[in-house]
Image (cartoon, rainbow over all chains, first blue to last red; front, side):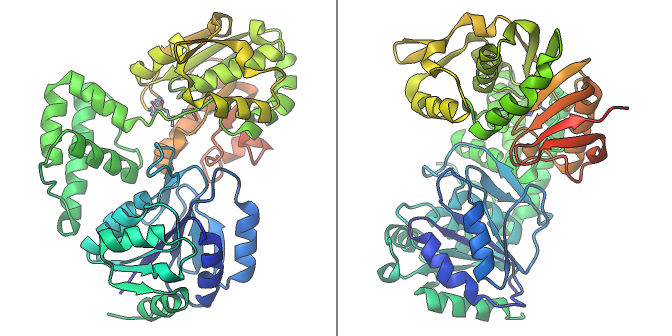
Length: 189
Length: 282
Ligand SMILES: C[S@@+](CC[C@H](N)C(=O)[O-])C[C@H]1O[C@@H](n2cnc3c(N)ncnc32)[C@H](O)[C@@H]1O
């Protein structure tokens, strides 16, 4: 039984998430935690918009906040997002990683330590290779790994890097990723 | 390369060893990381294992306990010193607009800048105070528990590579001149005018174990509390409360808050978004 989903994306990610996240309907039983490279500026408008098109509640992850199902949490710009073993968030202003803060690798790795095999990692469209190492760790820890099919991605570099390094279980387009996530999320075993 | 002996099958072992290491550091050196964010500490510890080619935290502990120099290096790992000038320009803007007028009413005032790291924020503050004509009226205490960063802060010499970003931040923060009016360039470095730091006392102070500062009018402590667990964070906010004069001002980082802390009701918000609070009277 899975406990959480982590998603990483950069260039083209906004569009991809607009397609993917609204497909996770009410009663979706897992928290979804997202790193989207969006630059240093405020992402308030973007979060409000996402919230308006999603059934799940969309918000920025806050320091010490409890992680709950029913929510999509976004890492705040300019901070790395970490998961604590009591299922709360913490933030750091540590150096950029893969030229990124927040970094997908950093979220994925800290999530893998906490959720181990009960974690689903997803890498979507993007122009760099952040997320590949993190997804590999999720897979090594027995979690489920999914990468957007590079042919269907606005920017294929990130999915390609993740495919090469993590050798994920699934390589799918966005529609099928949504289907898979729903299938895994409701699986009881 | 040495293989690191941690994976999904022994997560607990790693957590136990890290807890023992933090206990050991506290007993040996007095630095108390026991209530820091565990995820952050774990990341830094694992990073150190890779850098130093060690296979277990127990091995790391052995070295940390026996070798003070190595411990100092590890201290740098644990104390994230990343900082910048006029970080969050809107914060400085709010400080200029909302707090400076209050400070102006004092003939003389004290500022405590806690967790100042390498000092970029302190020089930012000093520039702001100078532009507002208040630098001569105040005493700034800039503190950190990492002596290495304090000595950089004292020198006021920085690499030039970030300067464009700093200039941009400065302009966005409502700066009145040009940042370059305040420093000289030398061989790829910039050196801030001594006039800015004349009034600043740089001192070693550990927020977890050291005492209050007396009668401070303004405290800045930004991006330090995010590394602390809830209880420790509460204690440190208590320390700030004790240190402030009535109506004194507390500024936290943009992702930090006194919301849900034990002291929430002892402060009122002046700028909720920029995390600027005022100590209530009485
Ligand atoms: C991320 S930096 C923040 C620097 C600056 N305030 C800023 O926001 O840009 C955190 C600083 O807090 C310091 N620090 C961490 N724990 C501390 C403690 N217990 N007492 C004093 N300083 C501490 C670290 O050494 C580091 O310089």
